[in-house]
Length: 586
Image 1 (cartoon, rainbow, N blue to C red):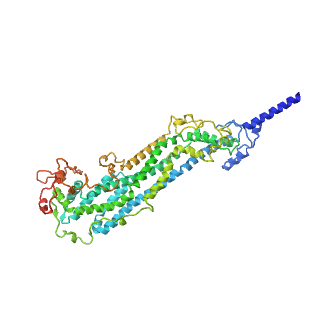
Image 2 (cartoon, rainbow, N blue to C red; image 1 turned 45 degrees about the horizontal axis):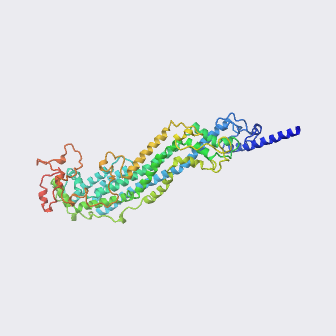
Image 3 (tube, helix red, strand yellow; image 1 turned 90 degrees about the vertical axis):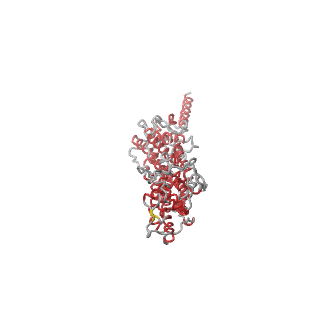
């Protein structure tokens, strides 16, 4: 009887031991005597002293972050490993965001170098071609062209410059110079030339070229500047968003998933994939809230880059400046008789030049050659060792994978085999307490979704101020990029809305095939209009306190630009009569 009882007790003891072994639990005596050599080795490999590391497992009542079971970690080791977990976390963010930072930094530098060199080449091309064609006449007036490129550079560099005003001022100065050159038999005062430039909008001495150039240059420069600024802003936002600090709750979650297995004497055990996701989503809750505006920003960058390789091509726009200016000058020369007669009507009779200064086109010397346009072979080529199509293609390839970066960052980190166990290894991973399956559900993305996060306690009522600021920055730059897609500059969209918002003219065509009719046709290329039914557009005047430009010159009345434009073009033989009539514009 006693033998059977002893045998039954023995069987029960064996059964209990088997159950304990299968369940992963150990008796206190067995746990306390287990070696911590693996833990000490890993701890030392990380560069820490093992002076406070137990040789065998001890009671874990002193632990604050890990389960208070038998452990191989002292209090000092737990604190040290908690700091290490934070460093590992920040390093993982830095490593996984490096693609973003590198792309924005390098693409911004390459586009910026390319755009600046395009402007330089455009100016160089104009100087070379115009010096060759016009000689001294160009060099004497080169400052007019130099000032145009100074202002274009200032605009691209972020200056508060209206492209519409820049180009308008350029044409005003140019018409004064060209008008003098096509009328060398007269001597014009500064006031007289200002009268000419003031009414250039009605005369359209350069035909439709100024409008074409304004549309092409404005759209291209607005898009180029918006893209360059957008890439720089993307770089800065990534820098700010990834320079974060983990709060105490995040550090607790990081420590529990990455280094509590080490303290339990299982250094090779990785956290379960779902456990890692919950910890990362809790720690990166604010960054996930960037997702919507971030995706809008990436989409806007992509769309502007497409515009630049299409209708807003910066290469073609920079290339066309010298060509279109030459076309404009040629147009004014070919129509100089009609233009001059209208100017003489409006601004009065100019004084003849002194006999020694009077010259005919044939007497002006070899420096003055016929005006002409240029073949494509004479135009400036590519810049910065590349071309726009290649730059845009490379950028678009790098932008595509950036969408959804912030919400996918937890998955990216946890997919690293060094950070978490594979999703297929659900039963042989660290679940936060021991080896086994992780049962809680994975939370959603963003701050509000963390209300039930089982691993990281997040205060959803206190959004991160810096993240909210980054969201606003993204909205601002996205708005600028979206306006640039329609040729509008947000810096001038309110003040210049009536003139195309900084020169964009978003309602106009993209190509250069403009119809030969409409409000931009030269006034002398179509029948005179009736001022009673179709009045001329009032000139954009420069306020001169009393406006000496509208004096009636003693004739008792002032003639408007509208009445001037209603007159038919008179034959050149009647020019002596015209110049004796009272000036209509002055």
